[in-house]
Length: 75
Image 1 (cartoon, rainbow, N blue to C red):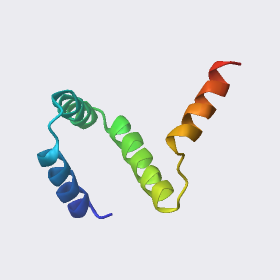
Image 2: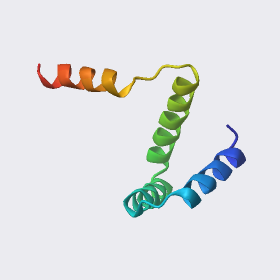
Image 3: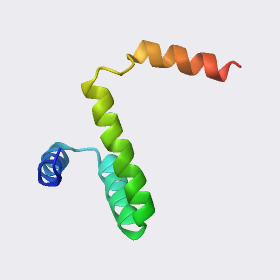
């Protein structure tokens, strides 16, 4: 996604969001990332990779994730 498209999508999602805790978390993330360029780069890279993974179908269902998490926690 291009920068402009991402900003538009974020605006749209934020306008629809009613969870105050989530909005505060987004605000904190954006404020902190603007203060630390290295953190901003890491988060951007992770977000882009996640977007690619979703588009490529590399995702887990909730049950698959719970099973994977349970197996790691029981080790």
